[in-house]
Length: 218
Image (cartoon, rainbow, N blue to C red; front, side, top):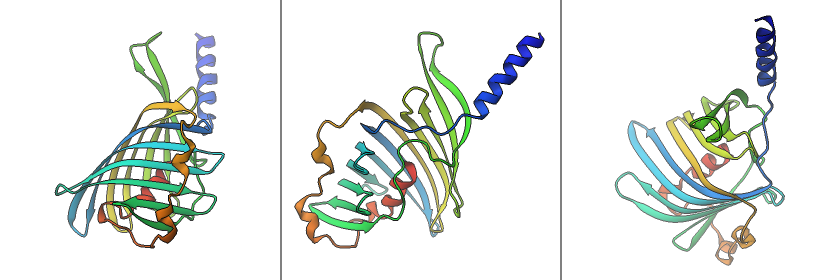
């Protein structure tokens, strides 16, 4: 009985010491995202489905898909984040806009995340997917999130967040599926010619503020 107690104690210490992990250097997958918020007393909802490509060596991300807003508004969009150049490009209706990126790129679990436990999906031995859960708080913000990643390879599975951003109450959930390692076509990170004359204003209110959400997630 004493041996069991000692072993459990060792496992508990090992778990508590688990450090944030890094995702593979290059990967792609599909994301489904729902964001709900309250802006000056007016509730709104944004739903999005997109293809996500991440290249840590190039310090670039590409997100391409469709966003649907409360009221039936729907737009096809593409967002390219170039962390080396500190620029984000948003393309909607063949119009490109740009915004500065102040943050550093994160690929995996943020360094300030707190390990919360390891669990599994499925029905046990030989039919399970082990995953870690991490809690993240953002410095200087009333905002926190929970991130789950696979134990093997640190692949993101889900991201849930809530709090206040720019005085707006927000709640967000994201799911990652069909993840593959590597980049099938590196041209997804190429900024198109239409962005050479990019303005500094967002082309559509549906995408206003989405740059902040992308940077908080990954």
